Length: 98
Picture (cartoon, rainbow, N blue to C red):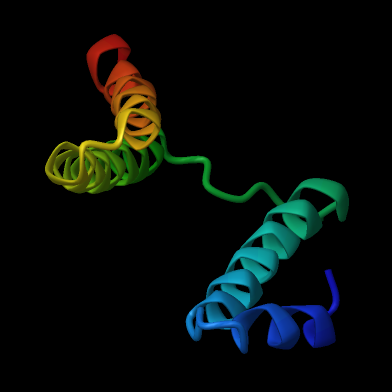
């Protein structure tokens, strides 16, 4: 999706869509660059640091899923509730299996 397409979509009443899309594409680009470009040294070799990052990220995702679940409950949105429940399960799984 090009930036013109993002601007066109965001002008239809969703002002944060262009910012969200740009941030998402930027983060995915960084992940792909780190995974594809060979490095001369190892990155993130500390198991404690990796465990901390996973615990923080999974916890934040679980909190966000809970907020979406509450919003779905208030709006009587079954589809949104199922999506939030799925995100909650996927978030809590690394915490329980860690």
